[in-house]
Structure formats: structure tokens, C-alpha cells
Image (cartoon, rainbow over all chains, first blue to last red):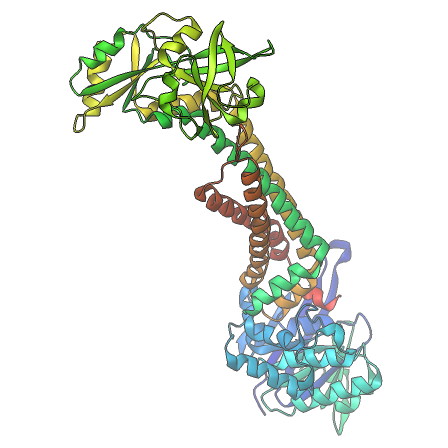
Length: 243
Length: 375
């Protein structure tokens, strides 16, 4: 089995203080491996997005350890975490978060630009990433000129252009109709075929279950089960160490 | 074009109303500062214009003279004492003082008389007549811009000063007084008559030094011999006049205060618009942070925005300021714009916009990339 791209061990994350204190994650263990599309499903408030943020080095865990390509993030300063995100993690957001004043290709290039890649090759990579999501004819379009599905595909191109090892998506089909949602998941499933890339999708959209290699369920900050394609579902008692 | 510059410029131009407000703030501020400092420079030049045109090596002036317009008098023997000093080739008297110019219709206007002698201070920028014409009986030189005030219209027109005839024989162009009282040039003897001063009296003596003579040595010798007078270099006399008119009267402080106020107002306006622009783009800055950009990258976006605002605002402000310079060129107090002031104003604009960016940078310093999941 390949080395985990991202590995979370005994993750506890507490949000808020005093009366507002919430234990959002309670002892999570999870590994994301290359060549796998993992779905994280659970009801609202179960800790899905918090876990995605911790795995993506946006939030630091209150307890436990996150490793990105074997490197522990414990004690890392905000700029070091930003560096990890810049090099190894690609994000896809439910509301796309494209820059409205930049064209599709500029939105994609931005990921390379923040890494200091500004050569012609970087431009070619951005064009190639858009071509990979079927948008080579829309490179000069602004987000307002694109449909929701097209905007999400630009967001995917932005996530993959930097050759990130982990693609983390937060409800990527949440704002799309079923046809566009299907198209987006087809793209993500294609990316997950690359053995060097792990794709992790937070969702509560049951329509996308067929695309998953693995489905992890979370409730009240705990992983309560896991299913793998073609394998009987694992139950809560095995949730401590999922990998 | 670098993408960071594209992002900054499009952020800036995206909201046109805010962009216009930012530019108007910068333009208002810089034009205000340019006008105040330009007036200051103009005032400064006008104050020393007589000293500048005298090209004196040294000045013999009554003790405690505060400015060129001081009207204390020397008794005249200083001239001979000066000429007795080795290295002095000439000591040319200048007589100044206020008098009343009685027009042909009987009304009167105050004038500032300047009595001159060849080899000393002379009227310049002559539009009509020549310096020799001043030697004719009753001849005076006045500036064309004062014709209406003095009730004259051409060469040969007559007026009276202290019941004595004054005939316009020479006309200058742009020789104006910052005090708004018209200058009237005439010969030293006639000036004494117009002011009722005794023969030999003078306000100043302009000292010329022989080529190769030591100005410092001549000055030391003159100072030792002239116990009731001061010996000043032209630079000292300029500084003393400027100091009196600009700071002794408070005029310079008022101009400076307005310039500082303009800078503060401009900084606040730009800071406010940059701050609100940053707040509006907070989601995008959070996205940048989430995709791994460093804080420095975001600061650079904001600073580019500030720099662009500065360049555009300054360009417009400079155009308006140059138009004002042209419009005031022939007035009593022209606005002066030097290359140094232009460069200084651009530096001030950059500084103002960079300072303004701090408020926006403070906002993004606290940005939480996790907010991209909640919006």
C-alpha cells in the first residue's frame, strides 16, 4: 500500500471558548492515500468541514498529529502551514471562490503565481489544467460569464494545476444540478485515478456515492463507519484507525 | 503583465465609484499641498527678488535690519568708509521707502519707492523705455500690471509724489511686489526728494569686490570699520528677509499648516477607501491565504493598489497644479512649481498611499483562511 498523502492521528479540535466551547472533532484517525477518492459524509454540524480544514492545514488540531507526505505539522507557524498548502494541497469550495476580476486562466495561474511560478511554462500548465477539465475554450472568460458547473471546473483546474498531492473538496456539487454535479464528479474521479493523488470530498449529496472508492461517515466529531467500493461496510467500532 | 499587478489593478478598477473617490481624495490633497508649497516658494522668491537682482557681493545695512523692506537709513558716510577698504571697487547706494502716488484725478495710492544708481540695483524685464531714460527729470519706472492702480496708461503719463512730478519713462513686465504695494523705481537723488530724505542718506549700500579679493576679508574689515551698520552677504540677507516675512509674520507657518492639513486629509481619504476595498475583497484574500499564498503576497497586492492609486492621482494632480501655475504666473503671488517640488510631491503621494495601505494590511493580517468554508 502507498504511503499516506495526508495522515491524521488522534485529532481533537475544540472550537470556541467558555459557553461556546464545542468539541468539533473527537479523536479522529484517518489516512488519505494516492489513487483513492474518499467521500466524507455526515449530517450538518458533524465536523466534516472542520476535519477538511484540519487535513488541509488551514486549522491546526487542538490535539493529535497531522502528517502531510510524512511531515508532521505540529507546532508549525501559519506561514509554514501556508507553504504546505501551497505545495501539496489543492482546495475546491462549494461556492467556488473564484476571483471575479480574473479570467478563468488567470484564476488557475494564481495558484502558480503564489508559488513564484511565473514563466511561460506556468501559463502552459494553467491552459493544460483547464483543458483537463474541458474548458480550453473558456480560458479568457470571467467567472460571471461561466455557468455554475463551469465555474466549479475552473476551481478544479485551480486545485490540480500545482500538482497537489491532495485535492480536498468541500461540497463540490452542493450548488450544482445533477447533470453538472455528475460532470464534476467524473472529473474528480478521473484525477483520483492518479496514484500520486488523493481526492477527499466532503459531501452530503448521495448522488455522488457511485464515484467513491471509499466512504467515511462522521457524526458528532467521530468517525462512525467506513465503506469501500465492493466491500461490506465497516462499523463504528473500527472507526479508530481508518486508513 | 505580472498576475499580482493584474489582480491589484482589477480590484482597484472593479468598483469605479470607490476608485473615483480614492483618486479625488489624492488629487484634492496633492493639489492643496502643491498650491500651499507653490505659494510658499513663490512668496519666498518674491521676498528676495530685489536682493537676487542686485547681484551684490556684500550689503551694508542699518543695524538690526529684518528684511529688504526695512526703511531705516544709513547717514551716507558708510559709502566712503567702504570705499577706503582694500578690495572694494564700489559701494552703490539704494534708497527705499513708502510714499504716496497722487494720480491725475487727485486720488492717491501708496507705492514702494526704490531709488537706484547705475552699477547697483536696477529695474529689470523692461517692456518699454531704457535704463538711461530714468535720468530724465521726474522719470520713474513702473510695472505694466500696476497701470490701473497708479492711474496711468502709457509712457509719458504724469503723476505726483510729494508734490513733485513723476513721469512714467520706463515700463517693466512682471516686476511685482508681494506686499501688493506697487514698486516705483527712480534715481537715488529723486527718491531722496520724494521721501524728503537728506542728500547722501541711503537705506543700503551694495558693495562690489574686486576680482580675486577675499569676500570674507573685506567683510571683516568693513564690519570693523562700520560700528552702526551691519555687513551681510546676499545669502544672509535673503535668509533674514525670508525668516522675517515667512515666519516672523506667520504667513509661512499658515502655508505649511495648510500643506500638512492637505496631506492628512488625503491620507485619511485614501486609507478609508483602501480599507473598505480590502474589507470588500476579504473573501478573495482569504481564498488566497487558503490556497497557500504568503502574507507578503497579499500585502503586495494591497501595496500595488496603493501605488496605482498614487500614480493616477498624482498625474491628475500634477496637471491641475501646472495649470494653476500657468494661471497665476502674472499675479502678485504666483504659485511656483520647481522640479524638486514636483519630485517631492510624487514622493509625498507615494508615502501617503503607502501609509494608507497600513490600515488595509492590518485587516488582512488578521484574516482567517477558514472563512472560505463559511461563505
